[in-house]
Every structure is written in structure tokens, then in C-alpha cells.
Length: 112
Image (tube, rainbow, N blue to C red):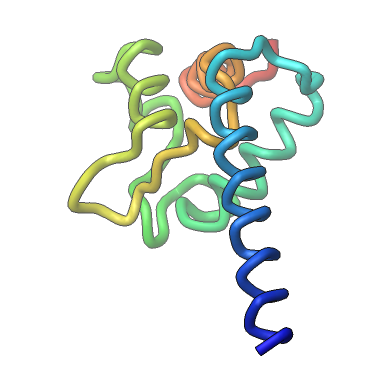
């Protein structure tokens, strides 16, 4: 029983910390540098949308593919995901400011 009790304590602690992190990410301003955000877009977005952003599991993320979307639309998609698709919400991981930076980066193909 001590192993089960220890596992339960670890699980509860992990969940509590994850909840704290998601709240702080939502309310915080960006603490990541533009270079770190660019790397996050290239690695994390690229893992589903293709490393060249030409598509994969997810749709293409090239500026011409995103022309119909506003920065605000893309920011919302990054933060909240797209229900019914493989696009997950990133709100617990990135701040709204970071998501806006990512959306602008994807729309222009250039870091700010």
C-alpha cells in the first residue's frame, strides 16, 4: 500500500502543479525570446504541420496558406485548438502574447 499511496501523492502533486502552470501561462506576458518562440514554432508546429510547413498531419502553415486568416483568428486557434481535429490547444503552454507572436510569424514567415 505505501507504493500506491506514494504514487497517488505524486500524481496529485503533478496535477496541482500543471494546473498552476496553465493559469500562470494564461495570465502572464511572454517570457520567451523571439528566438525561443521561433524554435518552438519550428519544432512543435513543424512536428504536425511538416518541418517545412507544407503540411503533414496538420494543414500547411505557409503564409500563402494562411492568407484568409487574421492574426486574431490564428491566435485563437493556437490557444484553443480546433475541436474535432488533431490541433490541440496550447493555452496551458503559451501566453496570449506568445500565441500572437507565433501567429504573426506564421503569417509573414519572418520573426519580428
